[in-house]
Image 1 (cartoon, rainbow, N blue to C red):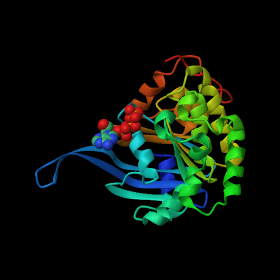
Image 2 (cartoon, rainbow, N blue to C red; image 1 turned 45 degrees about the vertical axis):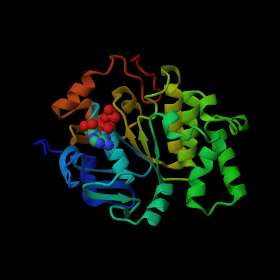
Image 3 (tube, protein in one colour; image 1 turned 90 degrees about the vertical axis):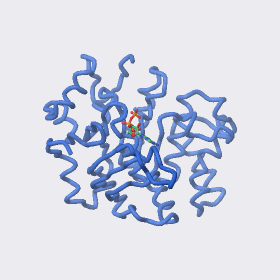
Amino acid sequence: MTDTTVTGVRDGVQSVTDETALAVSGLTKSYPVKRNLLGRVVQSVDAVQGVSFEVRRGETLALVGESGAGKSTVGRLALRLIEPTSGSIKVLGDDITTMGASDLRKVRTRATMIFQDPYKSLNPRAQIRYSIAEPMLSQGGYSASDRAERVARLLDRVGLTSEHLNRYPYEMSGGQLQRVAIARALVTDPEIVVCDEPVAALDMSIRSHVVNLLRELQEERNLAYLFISHDMSLVRVIADHIAVMKRGELVECDDAAALFTNPRHEYTRTLLSAIPASHPSRRTFRPAPS
Ligand SMILES: Nc1ncnc2c1ncn2[C@@H]1O[C@H](COP(=O)(O)OP(=O)(O)OP(=O)(O)O)[C@@H](O)[C@H]1O
């Protein structure tokens, strides 16, 4: 661990309440990278070490840090898409750390994920109508008419039309596909969404539209976002709280306004100094040219 005191949201873990959507405590992940002839791990990468934070209902915790800091690993651990080496994960009050597969499937309808690249996250051989409906089919319990109605409603809400239903991913733009990915993530009415760099792969011109859509949907549905990003200008617009990661550890965690005005860790100051001089306001996000 670093010698920096991690404060703010992390402190909330000690007093998890009904308002807590997601809470992780002491999360650690080592990836095995080399095994000997007996299959024993002889080399591993310590990607995440002792990370703790909570995300409250209806709020956004942004997870920031340079490439390789461990952000995506934390995002995947939060939904147990990968197994933690140690630590615990609570989703909407349920400890999912050792939960069995069928209960975990149910949890993943209430806590979902949007990935960076929709071309990779959506099945290239499936029509859009199937991609959006698939989480309902996996979970079961939705009638055909309910599924069709939910798909149509969400497609409309993310700004697409019934014309897109029978298309395949290769027939759509990156921005349209990320809207499909958002519809898919919301089709089971989750309360938590892990967004892993959801606009980083999109054209500069459409990033703000997708960011604004995510913010509107959060307000309408009281969604909790764990929002992974390396773009501090975007984080400034979307985050209520910010957790800063460096080399697998959380070095600072605070209310967004406090962190921007009074960053305590040297590394946070370095991240902030990289933001272009003219900040977008809290209401609008205009992406800086990359
Ligand atoms: N499947 C894996 N096997 C081995 N090492 C991995 C694996 N996935 C990630 N890592 C390593 O774990 C560390 C953290 O990676 P991670 O992708 O979580 O970081 P990140 O902050 O999300 O970076 P980026 O912004 O580039 O996606 C890196 O050193 C990475 O190389």
